[in-house]
Image (cartoon, rainbow, N blue to C red; front, side, top):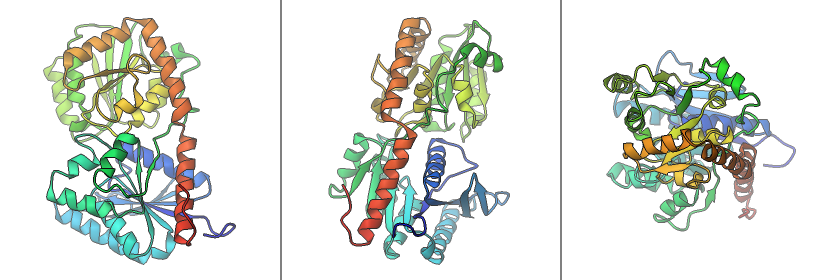
Length: 392
């Protein structure tokens, strides 16, 4: 693309998106907003799982295209893939680069079609470890097929070195860039008046509030969090608020009742104003079985909320034990409850974790830096497509 002409046009392809709200969906939308603000034209192509969802809409200026995807196993996926292929062909002159997110059939189709259309393609991995993009897909025939397709992307973006190592174990020669997730620290920051922040949410002065925010799905380990929290009960001053939506919502509601936690645990819908809740919290917990790089953890750290997370890849990239947070083994409810008490009962430790976490985010995980790295990546791919050497 020549300087001074039309803005670079990037097509994001993601299987699940708004009105789904999860870490990846939120990250993709925030990245789209930031890149749009920097002068790029971003279009997001995703699935239309319900006829009530609009086929096309604009969210804060970002064009969202939803392709038919009936909730019919296999058949629904095939219909979506056909629609995606047709869309990419018909609109091939409307974008310069295809950027797909997360290994799967949607990204496999996008990368393959991009190659056929002579377009540069980017694939961003979403998670690592046993349930991550690489190791999970290596365990099935279809998964290995999706990986082979995705490995043909012009560039693969990983969130950290562990992810890079996983993908290079398959194909060492790929062009890989490490671009971590980022946080807007002007939005996610400690409250200037924490007492008022708590008062506005109706939190009693002597109450201690623990938070979880994220998708309510099995891999997030919320049931494990409930087990660890139940060890602390009855303790009338400690509350646990869960924020999110997902397939496990009904079963988690039943589990709360089974454990007798109705008075202590609140199950809330996902919210776009999580910063206000974080600013009033005493502790944030991420109990997941595996992670990529949790936006929810980064946002809590940016708000100066002490974090306890499971000792899994992804969380280890963010948490330095006893310095920027605490790590506990997944599934060890006793260890989780001990960690909770160690933070809530030790104001000196809580203050240390809070300050160090905020400082780490400011140094390493700013959303502006993440946006700039993506912008440089796209410029490099455009230069490569034009026959110029791609920058390292």
